[in-house]
Image (cartoon, rainbow, N blue to C red; front, side, top):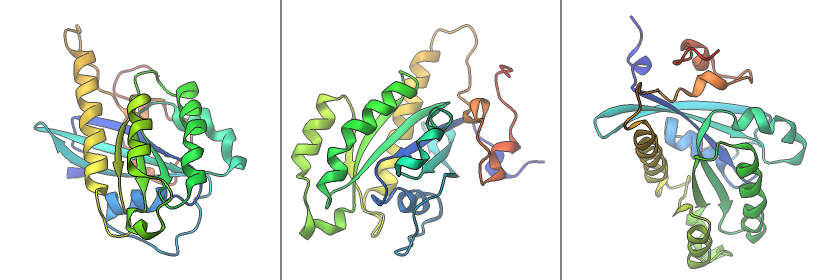
Length: 214
């Protein structure tokens, strides 16, 4: 018998993108393990973690991928985005340059990811309100213009972290459900079916691709 963590209705691959140092790794660890490390080092290459939540009575397992934001890791781009159905595009509200670079990240995402990918703009480190360099209204307007959802979070004090991931997973679920509606055979969006990288977590090897495509 498999563990309870292996029992799910949907498996969605979600990627975290944005400049190095904006807090992507701490958002990941806060959501999946409720941990925060003030001394966390830059991610080298790629890592991922998982967590399951309930969405409209279904068990949705999120496989959340985190990568280094530095240029020298850009060679992993196509494999990193492959199979992703959601993306959190993260910037630091206290560092305007990380917000300026959102445009480049969004362009890269749309060049490499599936056209139906659900994207959320995330202004992280909202606890640094005394150092704020990016007005909330400015980021919200940018998100609306580019048809992104938007939220501000703090991995440090947990503000809106749960909401950010729950909202994007719910949006993905609804998007997938709409595309499945009326199809002859519903297809599970299984994030492991297209993964070509060797993750640091063995979880990806525990499930066979759902749709017999490989």
